[in-house]
Amino acid sequence: MERYAAAVEESDAARQQERHYQLLSALQSLVKELPSSFQQRLSYTTLSDLALTLLDGTVFEIVQGLLEIQHLTEKSLYNQRLRLQNEHRVLRQALRQKHLEAQQSCRPHNLPVLQAAQQRELKAVEQRIREEQQAMDRKIVLELDRKVADQQSTLEKAGVAGFYITTNPQELMLQMHLLELIRKLQQRGCQAGKAAL
Image 1 (cartoon, rainbow, N blue to C red):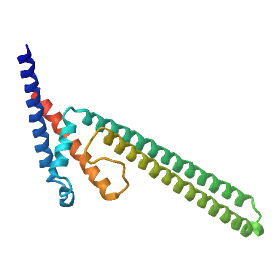
Image 2 (image 1 turned 180 degrees about the horizontal axis):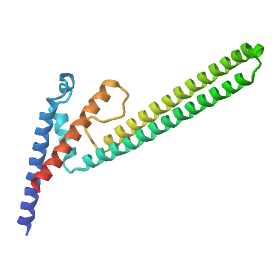
Image 3 (image 1 turned 180 degrees about the vertical axis):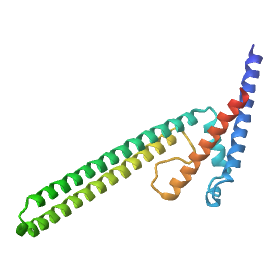
Image 4 (image 1 turned 45 degrees about the vertical axis):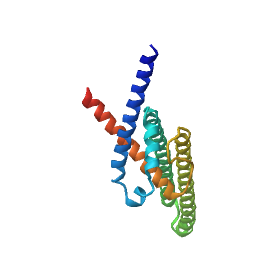
């Protein structure tokens, strides 16, 4: 019985080792598609460590979950910005209508004074709209930056090679390439699974 258990363990270890080599080989192949500056930064050790973290499939599930959360966040932020733009459009229309009605009921000799006041009001509203749009854009950027940091933290805690919290643009690009490698492997795995069925 003990020999059987040892044989099963040996067989599992051999399968794990074979799977690791397959993932590593696929990663090495995919890395060749990256710009040379990023190819140089992805050492054999980094790719081997990445392949090890991908063995049980958990990282694929984590990446898929993070991608879904990111899409929901982006959609929500897009809808918030769209709502703000619609509010601004309605505000501009209401102001134009108000100005038109005031001009129609104004006596001709008061028209230049009224138009000057309306011009100042329009300028103030346009300034407010610009400030609100800029504030919304800053909010969106901050929210997306927080999402990136959350993703980095999650992948770092999962032990995925190359992931840690950073705002360095080059490191972010490297992490984006690593995520793309993981996604491509995931897609290949799904296609291989379908072919096996």
